[in-house]
Amino acid sequence: ERFPTFALLEDEGILVEKGADLSTFPAIGDAAAIANLIVLRRDKDKPTQTRTNLLMDSVRLSEDGKTLYFSLSTAIDVQKPELLLEQEGVSELVRITQAKATLMSNDGQLLAVFASALQQDYIGADGVALKETVESFVATDQSK
Image (cartoon, rainbow, N blue to C red; front, side, top):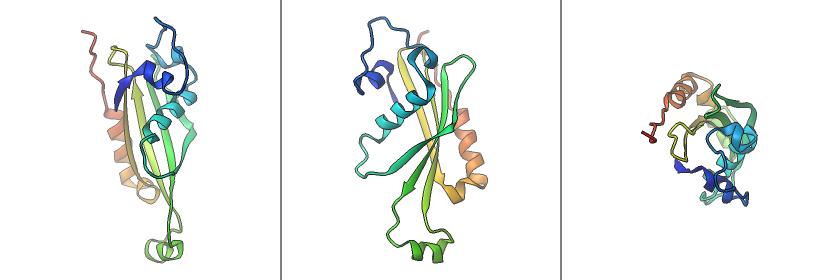
């Protein structure tokens, strides 16, 4: 997903002063609050109400402050938990999402990538592959 950094804030009613420094996440604000804003933007167009939670202990910034990493947990509604338990060995479904947001394009745009798997798959090799895929995402510097 790619969008203007100021739009992330203004869409939630946060006024951005002209010429404000939006070049790093610490300059914008608290890392967890920014992650929550990104999640709100991502979920805005979803037709169903899901219970997506930011995993607070997963929020971290790169040393230069231009990359934000975080994870999400989303409970998926299950119509027949007893049938799911019988078939899959679990009574609830939870989707784990790895996310990376970056300001490395240096053009006022925020780029975000998300990858997810069901929790039971995430625990194994799929989780490792998802983490590596998200980590490998690189934004191209557009200022040159």
